[in-house]
Every structure is written in structure tokens, then in C-alpha cells.
Image (cartoon, one colour):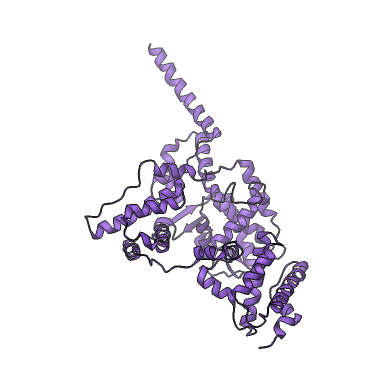
Length: 455
């Protein structure tokens, strides 16, 4: 192993050419960052085998010069560069592999911990613990297995129990306390109505599992008002106006994508299905080419929540948009077998993921000036599903249809297990109140006139 790999600028050029940057200036900027990193390693004598301490020193030094988001972004570049050097056999070790092994797959929280004042404590909070390794872990793991044998997916509950198990592993001194006391200790770690509700719910699940094994174990209750206080803390759904829907769709068609000209139509079609058919993000991502029936003008939604499958008829305008998208999809060279994803990314040569759809459609909302430029605030993509329900109720009122008689059909169309789930989507708006008031006025006036005639 020689010093040549870190001194030879040709190796940096070879790495950067493989990255395929879109903008020419990006190549030059990245070359400067990598040369700076190489010089840092040379000055600290870590040419052939950079370790975690060297990476931490580099991060701390540059955290004083760069803003946090710039530091995170440039660390991603350094990580790819170090991985490439290790794959080429040019360095003996990759410190990022060890960091991820100990502290999880995400780079940003690791960088944040490394540059903090008490980096050891921050890293300990990220340390990966064994799955269900606490003194109650066996009970929780066996309960999850039992519920899945009964047919439940149990993913949300599993994540909740894993968080509870992590707390117990970090506090082995609480092993002698009762389950109720353990739940209270966990709820006090983050004093908020939602975390209290989460802790009580986890305690109730574990107590039910223990009660199934030993009926003498009491089942813990969540408590009066706990769930209501947690719901009040959650973000309220946002109902788009008709004008805002038009702005969002227009922004999708104008989405800048020079290397993938058909992407704007892809985003437009996703948004149309989210609003007109009320599809969830996961349902959009899982749509296959064979799920679209152009002759029957329907789409099949498979493997959704509650193990449901449903066939949805679509309006003629929606089907026309879908046909136009399919033509462009075929022209772009996407696979045409029925099992291939409906929404295909030619750059990645695979379908869109749920996270990818959320990111790119959220960017469309920002470009339409519907959502603030930064932060997890403002309208969400899932709010299009809420808007679909609200606008459907409004249109039923306007056309003289009794909405109550149509709610079971709406629940089936949305893929809900019962009508109670659909009622969560019914949000009162001034426009809906006006339509309901107008209907009451017409019907009530007739009843009052009849009653006055009798008197």
C-alpha cells in the first residue's frame, strides 16, 4: 500500500466520472472537496487506513466552516469516495462501514452525533441494540409471532414494541419494577400527550400478551382522555381548494426534468390518481402494468391495508390521462410485461418507491406554492385523499344525493374495513356547511309550511 492513491488526482477524476453529475460545476466543486479531504488525511498520517477518529476530526473541523445541511451533503460524497477506494483495494479499511454497523444505516444522525459536544453520549443513543434483547423481549417477540400467525401484519405494533424494548435495554436497572411502573418511566422520558399514549398502548399490548400466558396478570388500561389528547396533538388534514388542485397539477406538468422528459406526465398521473381515486402513496407505488384494464376502465389495488383488494372504476377523464401516460411509458422503453411497475423510472431502471413518490410529489407541492419551501409543515400528499372525500361529499350535496346512503360505497372505494374509518375523513368545511344548510332550508321550509297549515 503506497501514498499514491490519495495524491494522484487522476483517481479522483476516475471516481467523479462514475458519478454522472448533471451540472458541470458539480464535478469541479466535488473535486475540490475530495482534494481537501485527501490533504487532511495526509496531514494526519492516515493515508492508507483512515479510521473513525480521523473522520470525526475532519467533520468537527469543517462543522465550524459549513452549515449543517452542507456538512451532511458533503459527507455523503466523502462516504461514497471512501467506499469506492475500499472497493478498489486502495485503502485497508472503510470507517463508514463500522459506523453504520454500530449506529444504524442513516448517515445524517451519525454525523450530527460525531460533531456534537458530547459525541460519546450522542453515539450511544444511536447504538444498534439486539432485537427484543430486553428482559421482556421474549414476551414481545413471541406475541408478535402469535398475532401474525392469526393473520395480522402487525407492523405498526412491532415498531412500537421495539421502541419500548430499546428503552428497557438502555435501563436494565428497572428490571424489578412492575409493567405499569415501566410504562410510566418510559412515558416520562418524553413528556408529550402523544408519547404518553404510545407508552400506554405498548403497555396494554404487553399486558395482554402476559395475560394470555398467565390469566392472573392484569390487563393495563390506556386511561380516559389519553387517546383524545394525543389526537389533538396530531396535524389536522388539509383540504385543497379546486384552484389549489389546478395549481398542483399545472406544477407537475411544468416540473423540470431535462434528462427524463416524460417524468412530468408521470407525476401528473400520480397526482390525478391520488386525488380522483383517493389512492394512498403505497398503493400508487405498488400498481403494476397488469392492474390497469383499459377496456373495463378500472384499476386493481392489491395487497393494501387490512389485506384488502379492490377494483376501482375510473372516470373517463382519468382513464384518458392514464392511456396517454401508458403511450409515453412505452415510447420511453419501459418494460411491458404485466408484472412491471406502472410508474417506471428510466434513470434508476426500476419502479418508484413509496419514499421516492413522497419526496418528488412534495417537491411539486412546494413548486406550486402550496407548501412552504422548507420543513415538514403545510399540506401533505396524503391530504389529497382527504380532499377527495370532502369534494365528493360536497358534490353529492350539490346534486341532491343523500350522502349518508352513499357512505358505505365510499368506504369500499377507499379500501376501508368499515364505515367508521371513512368518518375520520369527513371534515366540515364552510362550503360543505353551506350546501348542507341550503338542503336543510329547502326541506325544513316545506315541513314548517305543512305544520303551520295544520295549526
